[in-house]
Image (cartoon, rainbow, N blue to C red):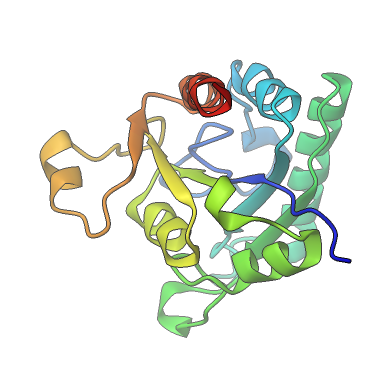
Length: 191
């Protein structure tokens, strides 16, 4: 007898959950969670989704910070969220530079596939939410519905998004709007 599968929201970190920087988030001092992120994640949790972060952290490969620093930033974020009664199920990140051509760097799917296997996830009932084309491509490649949030450093224009292949299933201004959209979709699915 197999266990029932879990549904998840796969979330990009920088530009989706927290303010991003063109120069990378390289320290806890530079890390600023969006004020609406706890409300969004609380809503996902209430809807029964696992919360899994999938992040590219090429600043490690570029020598701008260490894995230890990324783990420290992630630990601080988890601590803030825990104070808001939010539990992050898991965090996966790629330390490589774009020219390393690894499959754990989005739009590659290695980290997502690991999460799917380790947490028994039903991808068809799950979402990938992020602020870049790479996030949308990665989510689509594994079979998730995708939501583009326009809260990153250089949000794409409507015209640019129309030329993407694949396009996001939905576009919202931020993670809270994405969570509210998912709540509406869940309600209509349950009717």
